[in-house]
Picture 1 (cartoon, rainbow, N blue to C red):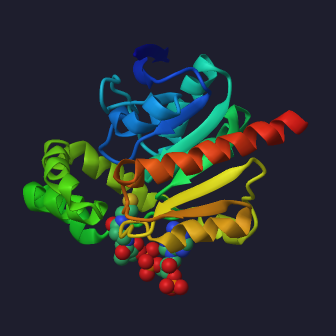
Picture 2: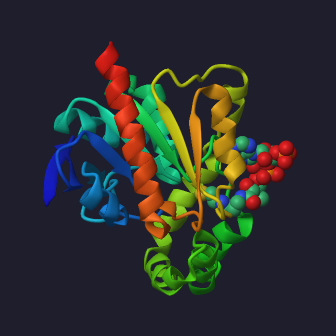
Length: 251
Ligand code: COA
């Protein structure tokens, strides 16, 4: 089922599984439907970011702006929750943790990193040769090649918003803030990554372990790990949710 919420003047569309307080944030050029397997098997809420899916438009200048819209959505739905973000969504999740901590029970950082530089040839290519570049991106994003054709078409159709999101990723950089000790995960935090992720390699997730995160590496999956190996991904997520419940139960 879909919820339609209003954040300021912007309509936010949310796909709902069951009402467990888990909030999923999609990646660049994506939408809430990427989380279908998680909504079906675990439940929670998958958000269409502004300017994506069935949500309305808003002016987004930085990843902090996306973080604001997601945090406000969480506040409306349940006050706080487990925030799960993939790629760009993982950058947004980190910003929610930094800027809107009161909404975060726990964090799940999926195929993401503390810095998300993007290959210049992708940024240039999406302007100059969207079709070829969309195919290249889809190839890079998937270990399981049966998804490539469909996503190449999808990325091409969404080349404009994909480029805008990737430019925001390219500017996102908390690496030195982590290294300087300015960021520590004081909520339960799990990083999940596909072992064959070429866009956000495993070492980006391992980096988070120095700051309090656990990491899980999922076999037979690339960057789109929650879609490529939902069985193992969901098992890790379910296990983590159990740990989060226990840790809050003891307080
Ligand atoms: N977490 C931990 N370490 C990171 C990091 C992250 N998120 N991002 C970069 N680093 C590290 C690198 O591992 C490297 O360390 P090393 O010198 O010990 O090898 C160092 O920072 C410099 O990184 P590097 O990748 O050389 O430079 P860069 O961060 O400027 O990236 C690109 C340039 C674009 C070539 C590279 O990021 C890349 O290949 N990206 C993958 C493709 C892509 O477009 N991904 C999209 C993500 S949404």
